[in-house]
Image (cartoon, rainbow, N blue to C red):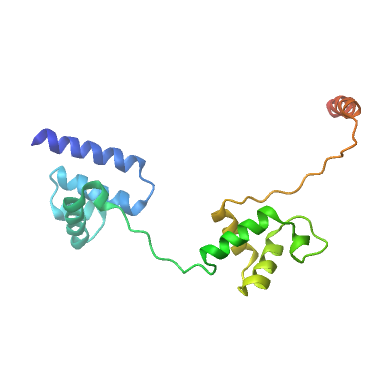
Length: 170
């Protein structure tokens, strides 16, 4: 029994060290202190929590072990676009230029163009930051376009780079 308790305490210490969520870390501390033999009153003082919190943590730990102490994800606001609409946005950005979908002079997608396209296509208003959040969720990254000259002479470019490096050092 004693070895089993020591193993649980060590597992809790390890979990406390690697845990990034402060609330879960506090719950791990509460359980570890209880397993080490501290009274509920002592744990309340050390962890700066209520008696109810100590008993709730104990109940959750007894029912589900370490997994019982995890926090359930909080429900947030519903997404403005459905999954199908997000997939359509993704495919449009990946396969078409803005000029192909009605934004004539533009050839690169930006969050402001995507905002306008979403409003035009789905009738849903977004801020540019909101569209960048969608991009992030869809795995799209924002990069500025770089231009290369197709007819550039590689030898002349190499000579210029060497010359430029020499100039930089002086």
